[in-house]
Image 1: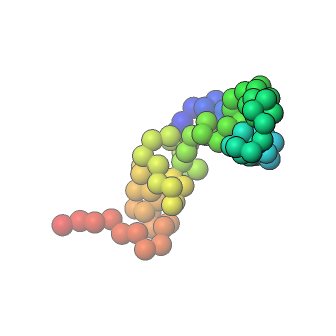
Image 2: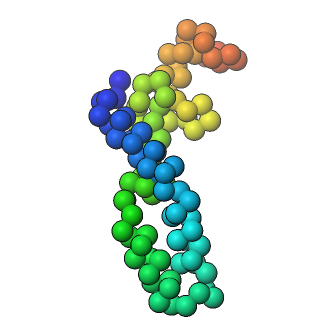
Image 3: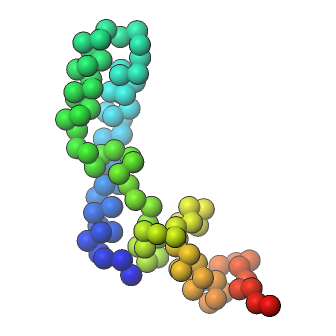
Length: 101
């Protein structure tokens, strides 16, 4: 099990990303538009820099929904390899069979 503080910090980041998503997208559209004047683009870039760093989507860490583990994460299942193996051995995940030879 991961530290509760690390999981909570990541969930706080997810909330911040959702809260600031529209404003960040609007500012990025202004910045990337070559037709807008240079000073306007610069002002938009400064506003973007003033926003909280944790409101950036790249700051979110993929974590297992079962255990909170940050490594060995399967995106399709939203869980770590260890949790996948445990749940597969218990027969909770349909179609997953432990291999043996």
